[in-house]
Length: 165
Image 1 (cartoon, rainbow, N blue to C red):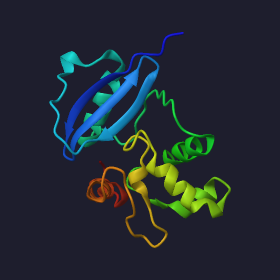
Image 2: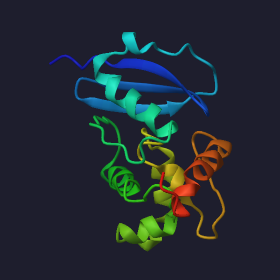
Image 3: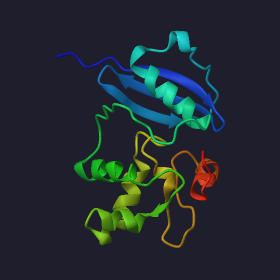
Image 4: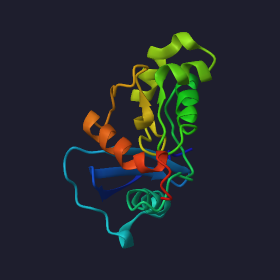
């Protein structure tokens, strides 16, 4: 059986270029890039990435809080997948600690493993690992860079303060 063809597209965001990857089965990766890439025109988007592109753009336009996408993430251990699933439970404008996630997964001693899984999240932003902070309230690692994590948390903050958006 042949491997699924992976499509790629780029879109601009306030945080730089975002690379989207996917197959007919769903979105496989979303990554912030440090280098500028030409944005993929909507008319040239691979069909399998159209909805992800639309939803990410809507997020940055303050029109969407929760992503509703089909995923086809090929890599990841069972534990990583459990962590990534748990990330979706941290609502827009909210934060949780690595310890909170470890407790939710039934293993409070797995804080470092949760952090490591968070760092391997292939769908950053969609599976909101930027909402995970240290138990002391400090910002800790983010694959996209701490400056992006800080920006995203500030971007979402009005929601936590009762804003209608």
